[in-house]
Image 1 (cartoon, rainbow, N blue to C red):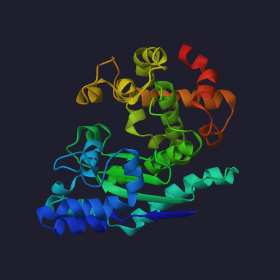
Image 2: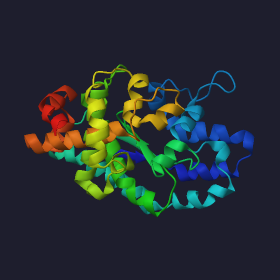
Image 3: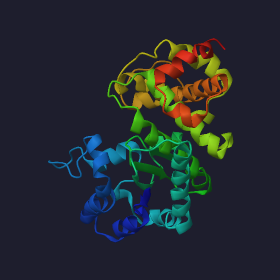
Image 4: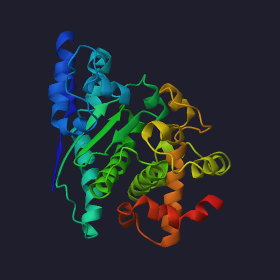
Length: 303
């Protein structure tokens, strides 16, 4: 198995030193070009056909990545923190350890080559602020992103975040992604990923998408609404349940009465319930269809 890093710190230094008119292309072709197949899945070209059109820079900004025009002298310290060789070794080790969990279980992974990078997050982005400065994306097999505002807290959470994304990466090698995915399928996927991360790094490392929700809020404010909308299909329709009203409003989506990342938290506790009830391990469960987990967890909604 090959796990390779694209060293973003080296590219950020080039962007920092470049004139404004050169910054975007350095970002596009120095940092994002290796991930072209990933961006193709999001229909995001390296460069828009017309100025100001949708491309990897616009998509990056939407996700909360620090875009090239914001890579200035104020980011020098963050670039320095991202330049630590040990950070990249630890990141690779977290991904390698995660994938090894499946191989040691006897699961042959169809994908054997993995590319990852660590990106600077935009501290002014509301998604980044609500996620306490870090996030990730591992849904396209073979490619893993994490982005963060580097500090002691986010750097310490990075291995668990990468394990979460590696779990997605494995799951979608066996479970086919559907654009009309249901809310039920999404909460199971996110619940599996976060249970996997905490199984490796401990519950204290659970991301804010879970940790910000206590059981009282889950039981009294979230579970009933999620349960009655498990069959809602399509990201535009289920994002309000998954991410909560505040983030949904930023996307022009309707409010459904959900707090921050309600669907993530609900999925985490649902999968935890399933694992405890069935005695199955998180590695085995990661490859199961969502319907099987949901059907076996009917009693979760009545707790």
